Length: 256
Image 1 (tube, rainbow, N blue to C red):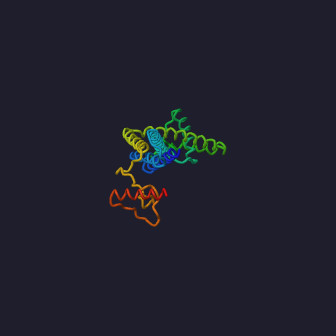
Image 2 (cartoon, rainbow, N blue to C red):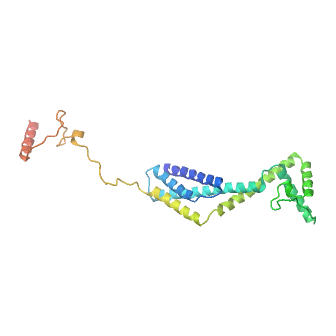
């Protein structure tokens, strides 16, 4: 659980960085996906001792989810900017344009020829300068006749339509952000996450084992007994006969 949470936190951080880069630049940087996968794998490996295929698969799934979350966050920022550029703030003028759209449709259905002001935006009209003077004047009159409740009702309707349009734009931007290179970066991210999380810790490259504690350090004598406090140096023997003689003498002293 600890390793899973560590990988999840790393994935959320990476996803936030991805979305922030898209929000600031308007572009996706594929290498961030690779770094995100490596970050998740490292977090899973460094936060616990469990390794193996299972941990590698878990880290890979977290990396994929984090990349998806990052791309979704980036798509949200892109869609929000598009909606703002097309419609602008929801103020009184914008609400009057909704009424003007209906009025304009009625005039066109009746076959009236209307003159548009210079520079009018005919594709996404939202301001007074985008409509014929006659149409805007009539729409403004209807707005003035509306009660506060009717105006608020219209405002809520516009907000609901904008949210629906924003959701559609987010989905379109999310799926439109995938390409061939995205698959490559995702492959590298998943591979890095799996390898870092699944690999066992490396042992000492020299293969040496720490030397045992010396007799002088441990205070254990040649025969397993503790050396006397006043004789810190180990005894030496000139030859095998001397060793046998001293061993016999030691055994006689113990027997006595």
